[in-house]
Amino acid sequence: MKKLIYILIVLPTLMFSQVEDREQDSLIGQYIIIEGDSIPRTSIDLDEVLLLHKLEFNSKEDRRQYLILKRKTIKVYPYAKLAAERLESLTERLASIEKKSDKKKYAKRIQKYIEGEFKDELKKLTRTEGQILVKLIHRQTGKTTFDLIKQLRNGWRAFWFNNTANVFDISLKREFDPLNTKEDYLIEDILQRNFQNGRLKTQKSALDYDFFELSNKWLGTDKKTASSADSN
Image 1 (cartoon, rainbow, N blue to C red):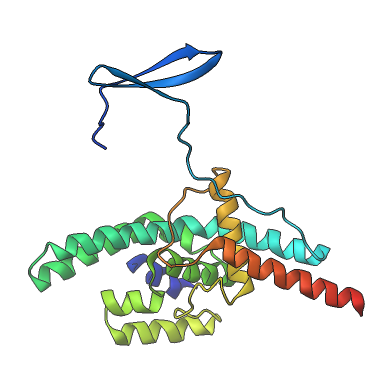
Image 2 (image 1 turned 90 degrees about the horizontal axis):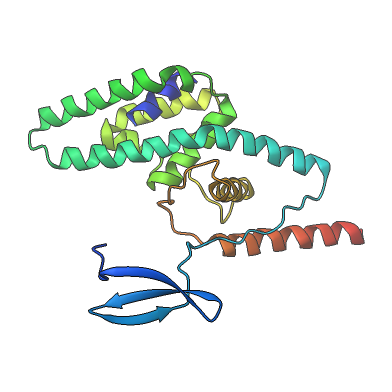
């Protein structure tokens, strides 16, 4: 798990001049004034809200496993979010540096900074938390941890780190695949619920998938499975 630590470490201009609220027919309407003309506006702009299904479980064990996964996901998500932010800033900065030697120096400085800030916390992760983190890094960056190491270091170190992680049953090549892996769908479900309640800060996934389509697939599968079990 200690080896994993070092892997992860590397890792509108306004168009309107004035807005006023006025009472009109017992309704509060918003008036937008454009060059002296008042235009009533009765609609309200709202942030997009994702309507989530009600949580249902086929058994107490399924519910227990979900709660365990929820605890672990909430714990490691901030590190995956940080990895994506650091990668974005690192990539932008490196693109502005011309000398290869200066690029190396800057990348190393960032690595040491992150290491000093989060090393102790990452040491506390369990094997399963480490694997969830690897998958979430892929969700947030669009790249596997293995590929990130290969990009920022070299292929040999990526291979070596992956073999070391395998000792702990952790694959750095593991992708986040909620379409084909039930656990990954549940992780996405956990993230969406905690984005809505404010417990986790939203960061859009770098991957392309539709949560409604995922829910229709997996919830439909669960209902069919339960129906089949009842008939037997």
